[in-house]
Length: 126
Image (cartoon, rainbow, N blue to C red; front, top):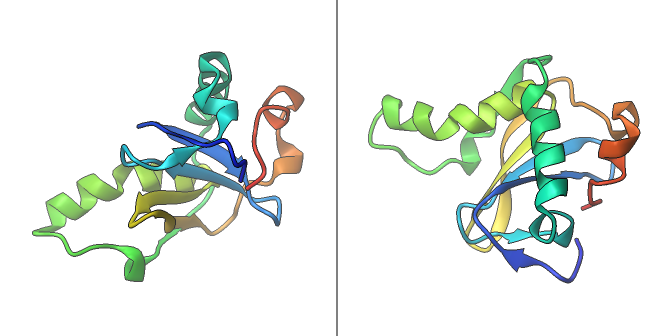
């Protein structure tokens, strides 16, 4: 990750070393690469692109990375956005205890090579 990270409350996207794509939720305190924290246009371009994708994959919730919830309704509310992003083929992380932790993974991950050039040129490698 880029050394020049800022703290912001937003979701951002990146490319894993194997070419898989990832979604990161900052939980209000997580670091965000300057590609997104320094450019509203880049953030909106990438967010709108991934938000517009249709579901393409089944998912797996990483149970050992979840906190305990008071009830199933609370658990489902927490997981909803992570599941939605992961169904689009993205690894989906939350920021907890000073690190991004994998919450949900797609069975069929989306790969960097399949992205349009304008999105490829905006995503950081993590």
